Image 1: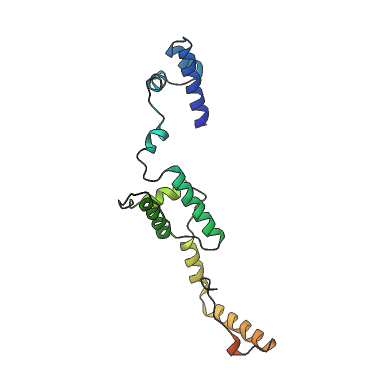
Image 2 (image 1 turned 90 degrees about the vertical axis):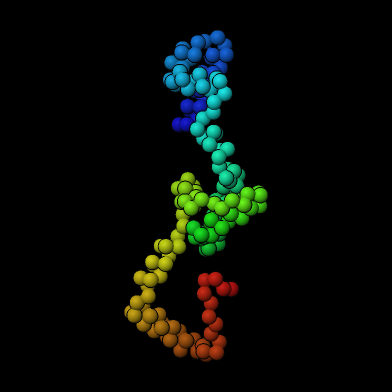
Length: 164
């Protein structure tokens, strides 16, 4: 919808350049005359004008999104703290050593809906799974498989989700 509005503004500006009055061009394309006048005199849209105030360029933010999605695909979805650290590293690489804002990661997550942190959900699911019944069931199954397959305790290795 925003691109349609921008196209209408561009078309209205073209009409003004061909000799149509600003008022007529604005009415023809359904945009406010003040907006058309501002654009003719060099004003930009809100999105473009705010780009100069952003710490990370759209390309750098896209890099962060792709980094996050790659980590998530590798079963290591980053936490908010990890996303913040990566953003700070990108800023430092670009020569910006000013600390990142307190709510930056929240705004980043709100803007890029494909990026969702999952650490809170995972931790709560783990806590719900730690019950006496769950332990009994797990160790019962483990004992059965050890006996059924004749596996000795010396041949058992401990691996968690972060080890290889």
